[in-house]
Length: 175
Image 1 (cartoon, rainbow, N blue to C red):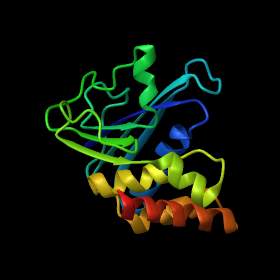
Image 2 (cartoon, rainbow, N blue to C red; image 1 turned 90 degrees about the horizontal axis):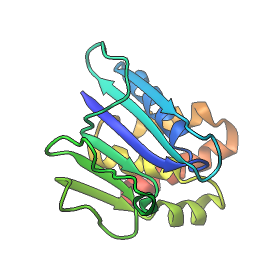
Image 3 (cartoon, helix red, strand yellow; image 1 turned 120 degrees about the vertical axis):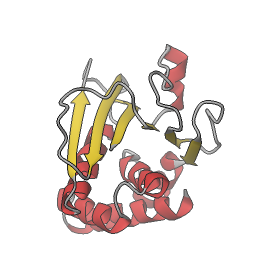
């Protein structure tokens, strides 16, 4: 089972990303959960979101305390004392929004993408969540790119959905 912990700030789209990710898993016939934790519910505040994907029914209904995959939307969270390494299992994967690799001393596999830059170039001033999902799909294979693109288009209809799907696919390739 994949157990995810998303670290982000309010307004970066991690809650929506977790929901799209679980939709993609369900499209593939898998079991999935998205569990947001909003905290202060303001733009820029730290946000924790959790998720699980499994081939089998998921019995546990709680936050993820021992993730095998961490998705970090904002490395500056460390500056306010948030440790994205907390509770990670050995041999865990990190997907990080960064132009350079970070935390290679902690995570067995580090996949990085400047999701902010890619999103800005392709979509303008919007959250980097679909780019982060493309990177996550490439890093883990937890869902296929095709089901992820379908889930994005279901969540975001029309031309905006098409553009978001293209951004996700570009992120998949660039990671």
